[in-house]
Amino acid sequence: MSRIQNILDKAEREGSLLRMRSIAEPVAAPRHVPAEMPPVILEPEPLSGTGLTPGRVVRDTRLDPLLVTAGSPDAPASEQYRALRMRLNHSDHGSPANVILVTSPGRREGKTLTAANLALTMAQDFQRRVCVVDADLRHSRLHKMFGLSDGPGLAEILTGRASLADALTLLEDQQVTVLHAGRPAGHPAELLGGLTMRNTIDALRSQFDRVIIDAPAVLPLADLGILAPLADRVVLVVRAGQTTKPAIADAVASIGRERLLGIVLNDANG
Image (cartoon, rainbow, N blue to C red; front, side):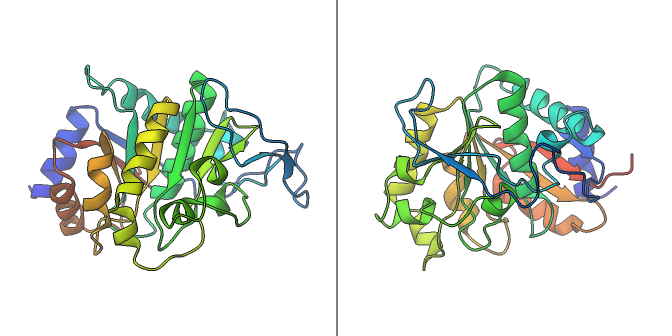
């Protein structure tokens, strides 16, 4: 039996492996939001229970159909994301995981989709204050999934061109706050490794019940080693039939077993 199979088997025994069936087939968008309708931008108001006033509050955003937890809450895939949230909650063991980093060994394995659906599920099921952060400054996708236009984001905060409050967008319908990546900036690793990034995560930690970070893939970049210490725990997303065993093993080694909260296996058949 291979080393990686041992890792997956142990994760499954411990309840930290969640098998996610494919949700690649698009689902219908909510009927009350016509496809051609642009987001409605509202007057910003302070976030309930926080000291932050987001730069934008939007309603009726055109969500990606793969955000099933918003568009089809009764779908089997939505149930799977709720199961993931429950496992995360029960994994605290007296050490709260308030800041959760989501990554994958490589690209196109479902980490952004998992981070977005997980954030929506946490906000819907428990009415918690949830913020999802796109820290993938090289290949950002989160703003597109949430139907958001360009504007100040994490890159602008890290380069001193925007404040944290100005870069936050509250999705009023979903009660999720989004900090998207912003406009591409040079030297992402240096920006993510600076004191401003640490201060930003600390500020979000103090204002939200859960902070979900959509991080870059583990390989071949050094970004994860910079970001992982800022999070309480890490969720690794892998794709059945695509992610190689050596890539998973290397990712687990890079994250560290003590920091790894669980493994999400996408497109699993069983």
